[in-house]
Each structure stands twice: as structure tokens, then as C-alpha cells.
Length: 450
Image 1 (tube, helix red, strand yellow):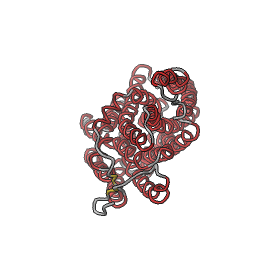
Image 2 (cartoon, rainbow, N blue to C red):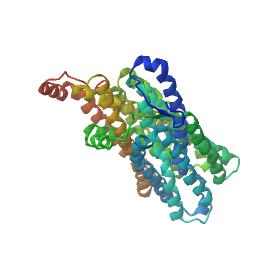
Image 3 (cartoon, rainbow, N blue to C red):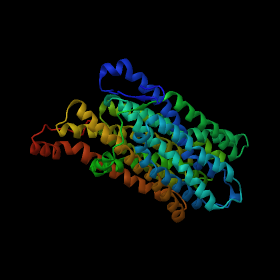
Image 4 (tube, rainbow, N blue to C red):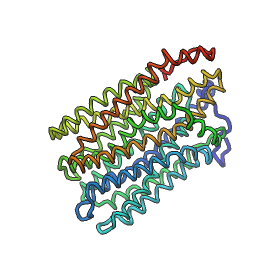
């Protein structure tokens, strides 16, 4: 490793001797500071889910305006995940973490400047779009950490990395709760986060590393985009992470618009779901490491559908206690599903490498190359699910005056995700995979354990 540029010349985490003597310590250090930067990124991305609660009648915004605003912020966060994924290979994981953390100052300072009654909706919309760049930090962070850890540790490491970042959603809601409780305004909240962004960028510069052999490979992006599993996993990730981020933006607004809660009352409840969903995500990765990601994902969708059915009933009965409990349970299940689905990704491409006859380091490089590239595409698609959820809530409130119609649509989607998971990753190995293996004269390999 060269001290000036913090570049690691040799990195082989699959070598157990290297991992035990050198790799594990370095990987965990990078993981810790990656989590910190990603955590702040999530807070800034979901900033407007909190700011809209501060924006009372004097701001002149309707509930539909607020749902549109948060939908567009989610959209930008989804789109920028694609270039952020490949920025790691161009600039290096450490270098890009410094850049991406520093860029968070732009939407935060801009929001500080315009956050006052009398500002036009168009201005709020444009400034809100800037906050979307915080959503990109997840993609670059996951791609970076994926390269640091061996396959047997990826479920835990990626789950911890993503979960620590996801907690940024709950953190900004808790900070907002304290600010509102102390009769502070939205500018106080923004003023708290500006120095935290600077701290995250400085710590990344001091303690993170770049990996030399993670080279820019535009072919990997094309290969990942052509692989059907990238889009199948995108569909499944829409159901887990799309639900998590979509509900994070919408939960407070549903409580204020459907159940008549004040911003302070809503904030007392909204942080619970994102907090539990974030904390439990590493558990989803760990369970997937132990029992297989496909199995955990399948059973998790059954539980998500059941929780959503309870939400439909609670919404129709206008039962706030039942609604909140079911919503918090659903948030927790999205966290487990986030961990299990992301564990599946490297396992799928490792299985494909073995099916091609690759062995040892060649198989590892193939799996790492395609899984790293696909994570950006899958992460972007998952975040787009958050856009769909907010737009579904917007239409449901415009049409029915409540979120019940949206919940029915989400229930149907979870049922589809269950069917896809079973058909592709649990049923398929017994039929199609065997036929393919026989035709190519290769050993039968199963996706059931990914």
C-alpha cells in the first residue's frame, strides 16, 4: 500500500491466511467508515421526508404536492446509483467516499437557504432534487465493501454496511423530533448536519483505502445488464428496499393526512419503522449466509404480505394502534428482505462462474466482477420502487382519501415477488438447471443456496 494515495496493491480476501493475518482488520476498518459516510448520505436523501412535516399551511403546499416532492427526491436517488456504482472503479473506494460525502453539502446548504414560507413549490422541488444525490452513496458504498470481503462473509458485511446506512433514515427523524420538541425550525435541523458531513469526509480521507485491482470495467456493466438475473433480482429488491425507502418517505405523511396526527405526534412514531428495519438488516444477511438467501427471501415475502393485509384492515377500521404496529412490523421485514436479497447477488454470479467451468481465483474474479456491477443496477431499481410507493400513496389519497388502495397494490406485488423467488431460485434447480447442466455436460448447480 502506498502511503500517499492510500492504494492497496494486493488484495485477496478468499486466501484465508491473507484474510486472517491482514485482510480482516483492513476490511473492517473500511467498513466502519463506509457505514458512517453512507449513514449521512441516507439522512440527506430522506431529509425532505422530515422537512415536509415542518411545512404547515403557511407554506401553501397540498398533501399531493408533498408526495410529489418526496417522489422526485426518491427518483433522483435511484438514478444516481448507477454512475455512483462505477465511480468506485474509476476513482477508488476511499477517494469516491471523500467526494460523495463532500457533495452532500450542496443540497444541505441549498435547503438551508430556501427553507421559509413564501418560497415557491418549484423552488422547493428543484432544491429537493439535489438531495437525491444522498441516495447514490449506498450504491458506491456497497460496491466498495463487496470487494473487501470474502464470499463467506459478504451477507454479514453487506447487511451491516447497508443497515448502518439505512439507520440514517431513522436518525434524521429522531434529530427532527428533538428539534421540533425544542420549538426549533427546519434550519436548525439543517445546521446540525452541515458539520457532520464535513466530519464524514475528513474521516474517510484519514482512514479508508482504495483497492488497486478493482479496475474500471465498462464491459462488466454491459454483461450485468444483459444477464437476466440482474433484472430478476431488481424486481425482488423493489419489493424489499423499495418498500423500505418508500415507506420511510411516506409514513409520516400517511399519519398526518389519514389519522390527523400533528407533525410532532407523527415524528414520535415515524422513526420506529426505519430504525428497526435498519437494525435488523444484518440479521437478514446472517440468516441468508446460514440458510440460503432464496429461502429467507421467500418466507420473508409471505410475512410481508401478511403484515400488509393487516395494514389494509387497520386502514379500513381507522385503528391507529393496529396500523402503527403493523407498519413497524412491515418495516422490520423489509430490513430482513434487504439483507437476504443482497446476499443472493454474489452467490448467484459465483454459481454461474462454477457452471461455466471456472475454478479458484478465476471463479472469484468472475463473481466479484458481475456482482459488483449488478449491485448498482439492482440498487437503482430498488430505489425506484420507493418512487412507485410514494406515487401510489399520492393517487390513493387523491382517489380514496386514504392509503388503503395503495396497500392493496403493495400486497399484490409481494405475492408476485413470492412467486418469482420460488419459480426462479427454488423450483428451477430441480428442472431447468438440471437440463442445462446435462446439455452442457457440467455438474448440476443449484441457486437454492445462494
